[in-house]
Amino acid sequence: MPESRLKKGDPDLAKVYRRFDGRLITPSLAGALLGLDRRTVATLIDRGTIRAFKGRTEAGVSWVVVPLGDVAAYGDRVGRAVPYAGQRLR
Image 1 (tube, rainbow, N blue to C red):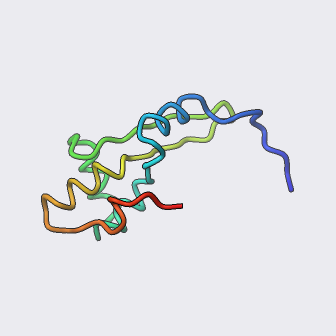
Image 2: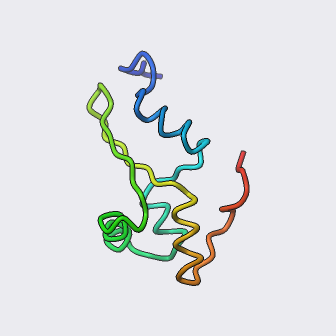
């Protein structure tokens, strides 16, 4: 298996994961859970309806995550229940 170019994970991403107790998902998964396309999720992020945290690792890899709670709250407001939103997945 190839060795990672990073000696440890991105500290900014680690902070976000700690802040939300690991309950973060990608925008594409948010769209899948809500039954929305990628463009609509991007619009919700741009409007501030769903928060997004973005960054770039030392190796130049970009990352974007959204809080599952924001996705679930939006789903509740528009009548699209998000499965597993209240559960801790293993």
